Length: 113
Ligand code: HEC
Image (cartoon, rainbow, N blue to C red; front, side):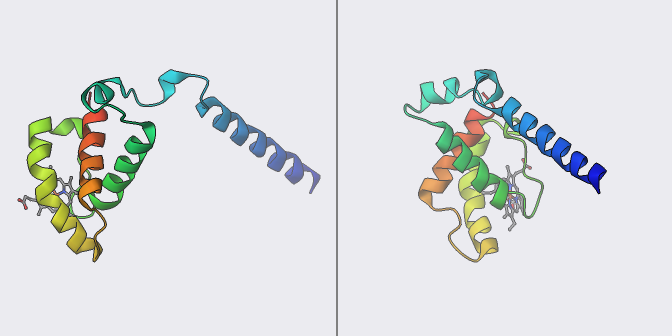
């Protein structure tokens, strides 16, 4: 009983330690958005995270979600608009609207530059 409490306290401590090490103090830990920001002024971490989430949720349902660097910008520009209707059909709703499609394209660019 007592040992269990110590263990729980210890794992909570380790968990907080992991969270802290992912925290904002080191800028190198987040994605480097400078290339994407040069191309898309105002591009933010929130845009990146939103695009990443849309991509992860919708683009790995029929085939693996391809790595951002697996296709060139021109290839993504061709494939993504072609795949969005497929993804929406599969979701049974407009999971990815026009703005969402842009977020996905920008995420793929940001994650591979
Ligand atoms: C309903 C199933 C389905 C979903 C959802 C889907 N795909 Fe696809 N994807 C396919 C199929 C089938 C192909 C084969 C090529 C074709 O249909 O023209 C393909 C091919 C691709 C290719 C070409 C791979 C190559 O050979 O280079 C890319 C890139 C791609 N998909 C990206 C995406 C992205 C991005 C999304 C999310 C917006 C997505 N896919 C969602 C079914 C899907």
